[in-house]
Length: 245
Image (tube, rainbow, N blue to C red; front, top):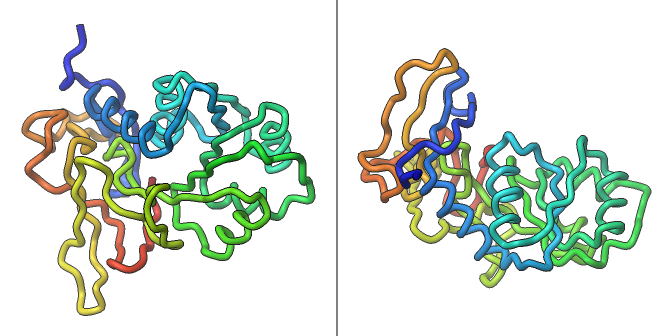
């Protein structure tokens, strides 16, 4: 019997230190983050999600695989992304939700292929800041809303999102998801600061690639941590240079 505080996965990331470290995510971390994704995207059993993201990455694993299984939907996979293949699968499998990184959206936008993609009801972008012109061009060409989110492997990964039922601001990482707090640490006079996150999504511990004893970051895994997790990502309150999800 697994407890909420037990480690479920260790995802290796070097984004915040330059040295690979294992982010220990608990069953509670993942369960809460999956529930958040299912609710925000309003995933249903009849949804077909295009799995173009690697499943060893937090984005593909949590927002793609785990969320689809939790909703009882269908995850259609491609072994290696190409815009032509992705668009072909959207038409073939009547994909309703596409999750990808900005370069995927740009590649699909500039593809010469234009199959039937009218089944798409929602697209989700993460992993880097999406250029506003790419977002607007994609939405116009495919008649489908693109929502951006932000997070890190260390935050299970989703920390903030442009919610589909709220006013959306292109170029923004949105607002914190339920149960999560975010702030800018030590902002400059220009309002630029480091994003810090705390909440049920923050990892339990980290260890290096050589598997040193984990460095505990929360007093009780799965609960709302009392300490803030520094992301090393800089942002302002009006726009973001976020580069990780």
